[in-house]
Length: 226
Image (cartoon, rainbow, N blue to C red; front, side):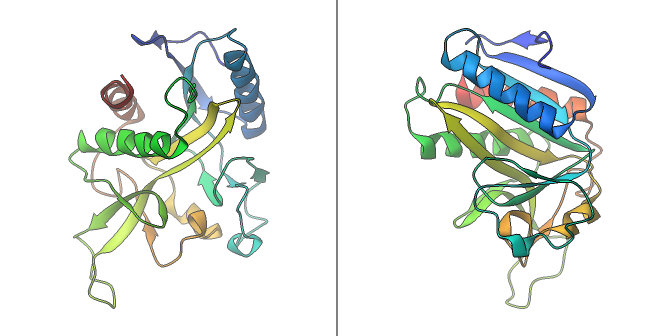
């Protein structure tokens, strides 16, 4: 399912893109096969850009109580870290198959690099993405919305991060909301975090396309991982 790469960067990382909506189970099988080949030295590291049909995924820490609408969309066991997430049309999913062993064997540092990659990418659209202790993902402070009951700015999630390692090769990765149906997130407590909203590039008033985001992702990756 990983087609011929459309680009290979200076470090030999292959970039793949799938048009249309990719079945989640098929994508997971393709990722696992590629990870095994990377671990054996038979294939290069890879980044895979795609979209899924509407679905919920459950990470290894998922709390069943956070699945608020179990019959709304298919629910998949993701076998990655984290809790429940939503994937669907209008959301760029970025599967990251990289050799973390070769990159220092520091999982926390690797996750921070993924966060920095997202933040660097969003900055190209004049969006200030931020991370928060105890809250997975990348967040945007909403100056355009009323303050919370405690007088704080509302913060909405724009990107999710969840990975797994096998033989020090990463898989799963990140998702960034470009123009998904934000109401679809109402069927779960995203990443087990309540009291906050979800946003997207278009929701923030930016007419960004998937192609725009993909180009920014490639530049951001070179800046962080290059």
